Image (spheres, rainbow, N blue to C red):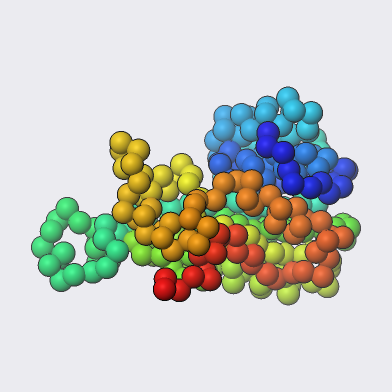
Length: 284
């Protein structure tokens, strides 16, 4: 596991992380475990969750792999029962499950009328409503349902916090991925709504908005089959002042700050960009 930049005291705390079998959220799970939290590593793929949990446990942490489908309340409730039995009630909920789908993606960045005659292209007019619905549900409903289930246990617990995973897409939509951009905008808005809704009961709700990170889900957009960067990668890096993609460790400091009520106890309803300066650069 990577070395975290600083530690916070999470001993006795239970953290539930959805999508924890992925690149970014597995890093979140490892970081919280290094700070002493008991981490429920939840993922739709139990095998992916096991890999991460075993890595944490072998390094001296405490982790439990749990299968979960964030779009099915019954699955989430079953996961909650297991976690409560093994670790106790949730103190930290990190809603990391999400992603894009090719059915919610256009072929080209902008539309040209001649594209209508090219059956090999997916234009805006060809987008599959079911694909759009899947992407939106995975990101938004997949944040809402786990929050409904786990937040009940968090009421009245000292230091209770919910951290959602948004995206820089939430602020300025990227070309080609309208479904994902809209869904992450919903997550950011929902984070603000939840922060107000739960404020009087002591549950803080914030979000992290990663910039460009190379993950399994976006690799085909960033790299050609032979491993060379795509034109999209060149455009991204040209508009990222730090001139590189982020790595999971770049998110750890923000995660720990938002988790620690001593450091961010008066912070709720914010979405923190971690983007290498992408949002600050005008392109000129």
